[in-house]
Length: 198
Length: 198
Image 1 (spheres, rainbow over the protein chains, first blue to last red):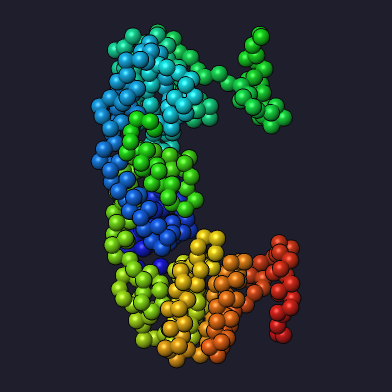
Image 2 (cartoon, rainbow over the protein chains, first blue to last red):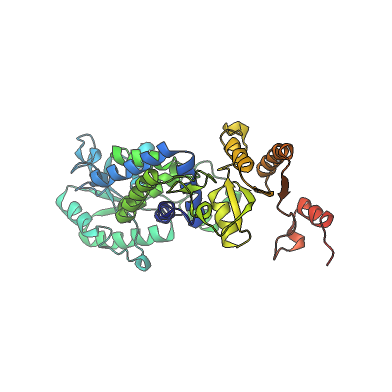
């Protein structure tokens, strides 16, 4: 929109959102200004508030508004188990599934040398400090089963084997509800080689 | 993220953007807080600034920071031609193509009774006032060639025929660079029936 510098700047700013290109940004700017100014205001305020309040839990590195997140501050979690996850969304999914009742460490990403994300950016030394200082018996690597997630898990496993901690990885196989004819070869191979007696 | 109310509120707010569901909002919130806090700040500020400054041109209804947008304020446009467009983005596309040197009226949408968008929401009476007050010879209906755009164009054409103004519609046909084998039947039919002698 050649006529309004503010609209132009809004479009440019919205393009900083992941997955938003020039056309989507244009559509969003139009929508916010023409159809939902109240929503626009709430987005602006929510961002400002989150920037001011949200920081990292000093123990598990997850997003938190206080020094310790509620999970780390809880007395009801099993502090001998540590689950390493990539993102807060992964922690949320695991919590919602009630799949785990131990503690977490959140990497906030995975190893990605091309994007400049190495062990330092993932807080690996903070994670090692946590493992060395605590009474942790088992570390469960719950990074994604993607190429990057596997590489990150392998890297951490190597580090932890030197520390003499028991290290486990999530089971690979056919997801619940999955149909064999649609599974990729890697998943099927894994499901066969890890088959269990019933 | 169960632990941070601000992150949760940010996710909810981001879902007010068009085309953004819970998963995208979660990804956006994570990205903004973890990878681009500066970008997050610029989005918040750009929204606030646009909300404060951007209003509508009193003549053409396009976004504008002053009473008249630059097109309406210009002395170099042909004020006998009026182009009716759906959105500021459409006006921008027409301007960038240098396809038209007259004046505009921007509906800021199309007729959509199910969404509660009728003639009143599109500023049709403001448009009629403009046409009656000016020395306009021809009104070019440049709404989209979609079902809704066509319905809107038909509705406006009916109104204007009562006013005795000359009304035209954009040509329909095969787009430049288009390959016939990929054209839909409607476009091909139109291209044949509107064929021109060369």
